[in-house]
Image 1 (spheres, rainbow, N blue to C red):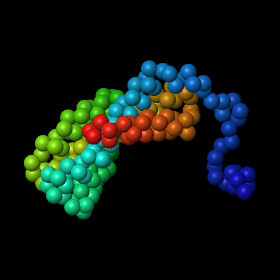
Image 2 (image 1 turned 135 degrees about the horizontal axis):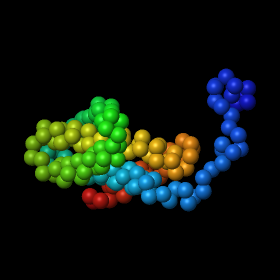
Image 3 (image 1 turned 180 degrees about the horizontal axis):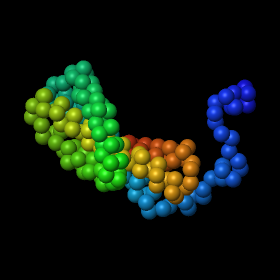
Length: 180
């Protein structure tokens, strides 16, 4: 079935030379490791609120599950709305790593703000900025990873995606424990 459908999917068939995978040593390039570390650190900061923020909101403000979900909704919407802006900024300036590191710094500054907020509604404002900072960090870093990985590994989009997942999931695994 796949062989019959392949010509109609406009998927080019690659030669053995094109399929040759880079060695593991190709991954150990400073530029590639820096971007992977940037992605991991962003995931640590962004995921660190998942486990402790709902508890804090319930204890401090008596938030219900619906109100807590509302805050995470605001974080997500701000993340999505701000993504094109920060992607365009990184592309326009040509400084994707700088924009991404600015987002990482903003996440690090905003994270300790959550427990200091004394107003139920101000926490939503902090959440919106936190979501925007998350996309400021991740959007340019993701495209930068694609560029750096292509320089280091050649054109291997699946391997690049696998490296992204390894870095991001590693950060997500460490994140919740950083605040606990």
